[in-house]
Length: 178
Image (cartoon, rainbow, N blue to C red):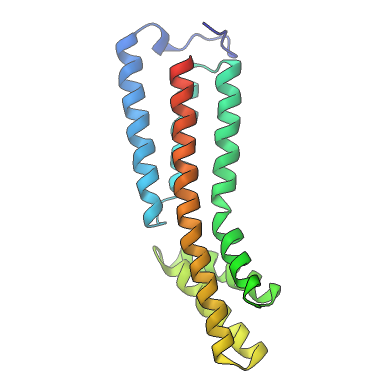
């Protein structure tokens, strides 16, 4: 068995039944986090990450599990930025101005905090439409930019869901190898 990074031996190494219960509990929380990505009320990738982190502290980190936890952390950060990246890219590709996109994303963050679960996407789309309408004075072009941003949001959901699955699989590799 690989040496743990911490000097304190975790309690789960003394009792295989407790380890099994812990693994089922962590996997259940991860699956809950994965399916909470649908509503965006609960930050599902952060829940998956916290479950993996809790497992690491409960069982102790080895050098390999620490490396896997770093990979899981990187995926969580990347997945958390997917909305902004994909929504902004689609809107920029449609001809929207970068400052309108930035303001729309900021409005989306505000909307997410103020009017969950769908306030973020609605406020972002309304803000982009309004700013592009003021800039271009052409509602068709403004609607096109908002539509492209909405398509980017849909792509971001699938990207986040795939990243959530990858995070769970990395944790499964961690459990299997150690």
